[in-house]
Image (cartoon, rainbow, N blue to C red; front, side, top):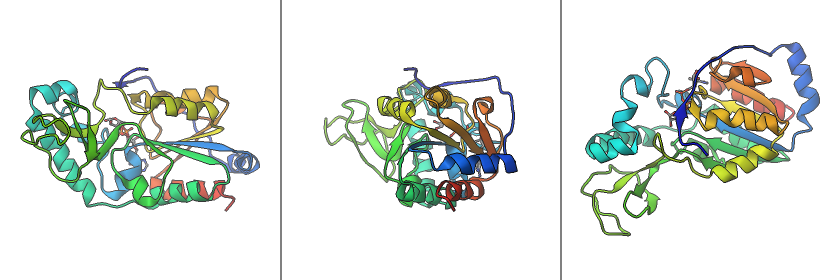
Length: 261
Ligand code: APR
């Protein structure tokens, strides 16, 4: 399993017409296991910045300064300030119609739904999604870099904090997976991709692996692959179907179709 890295080389094609609608209607009923991958675009309309859009987080901060283990070793205050500011924003927002539609899908779909999110916000859970994998961690949790203990955390982190488990200071960090670190629950993720028959990617640019490679895994398992995103992602050529638009508009419509609405 590879650690988090970045990707290149897009081609685009589009497949959303009356024929696509009729085709979708015929095959919807047949699905048994839906896997959903979400990214920052799903939470954008809740007021959380994405990473690579024009005013995105990486247009204002360098990954090497705030989102690597090396940065934390070099200047922990700068890293903690960055995540403290993001945590405060996350605590002030709620789920949108996109999150709510996905929770409805999990609740009402007769088959299995597995949601894999790259997002570190709690908006899926707040909307009611339960079968959820936070592959990049959670900003409302803290982890100790010394002993690995993890716990819910909603206030600012600082280098003076002492870990309640190992009693050592200076190791408390956000429980977020940084570049170069292993994402969480990769075995569960690969098992889900290997058994899904519908894979839906929502609000992600397809720049970051291993998540950007999940569509290939789903295709290899014979799944129908769908991209719901504001614009074509880097991996658009891997998808059998794409519907481009805002998550709060396209996700509820697509979920309604899946539920036979
Ligand atoms: N509705 C739907 N899609 C949207 C919306 C919206 N309202 N707004 C933006 N998007 C799309 C953008 O077009 C873009 O393709 O969401 C995508 C966001 O892409 P990124 O900013 O690259 O975010 P993401 O793909 O989630 O990043 C992956 O990279 O920085 C790391 O660990 C971080 O989990 C993150 C990972």
